[in-house]
Length: 438
Ligand code: LLP
Image (cartoon, rainbow, N blue to C red):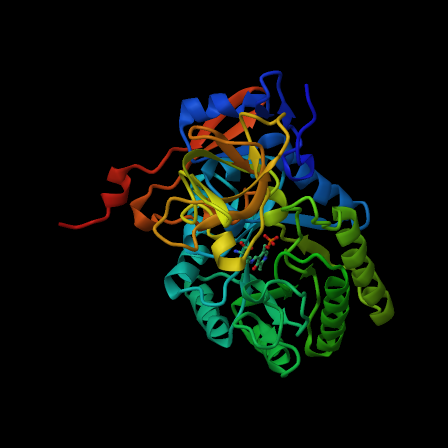
């Protein structure tokens, strides 16, 4: 066995076999490409488990009363929902669709939190009818609507209030949420959070359990978490005179992962120390009992577990300018480079023991110049038919995939112990035409 190139960004089970092929979960990626075709997303079960356990242990060792909620938006399907529920995780959903999927997967809905800045009346009514565990209320409109819906259903719905602490986590502009100028949350700074707490406590059919915030994603710094936790706990303390009893507290998700070898995300233990430390200090200084802590990692669970696998087709060398290596996927299965300027590593999956001697631009097959997956990738020499693996692709790539140019969305396999299980089949032409009414 040779060493794994760029091992830091590959799943924990990754190896290189004596044919020089990348192997994940005991499955040779060249064999997987032959069996399932490309583009293919390969999810490593060992990494999913290790990430879920890593976060769980890091937080629970400091605060036993911590609940892990997987943020479905990072990527969810029925098989993954069952797997993660089996690890004991709860879930955060942001749409009726995600909720319906969890229900179909047989996940107990009392473990589910419903987020979102504009849940529709239909989504809220369905969630209440299905007896969802918790709703994170995000607007005055929703407060009134949910109170009425719960009243009609004859239940008292447990809710959190999502506040906005005006804390900048220094993420990409498009993925920052906890600042004042954001569509998410009731700002503390303007007094609107206080008013929301007042209204929630007064609502007959709502049971206010606690406060939630989410700063942005991915957050490589610890300071914003500590700062926002202290601020929101201070707010919670002030709200006690209104009658707020903080039973649950969520600082959201946003835990970073390494996309490149240069990335240095804090380990789960560092996030846990920053968050739990700030929470405990605040509780002590305000004389408040310690609440149940909810954390909502999405990217940190799914991201490191997923590897995208593509086949090289056309190679265009523009002398003195650059070499474009085009693959059979692109912005339709991973919009992140085009949308956020996200940077990924790449490895030639069928030549993983060859030195990375070439600098190329890995382009997709979509009809846009912006459809580039990796600029100036350092990889081993490739030719048509070579396989390119892009690691750290499990979160927000398949989840945000589209059928742009009517390229079907990729197949997804779950690998473990030398077995590959197809958990999503490739989208066919017929699938893409199925909703058209003629
Ligand atoms: N909780 C709430 C309320 C959220 O809004 C989010 C993410 C999470 C948890 C999970 O954050 P995570 O742990 O996955 O970082 N499409 C973007 C990311 C958008 C994140 C939206 N909210 C990307 O590809 O980077």
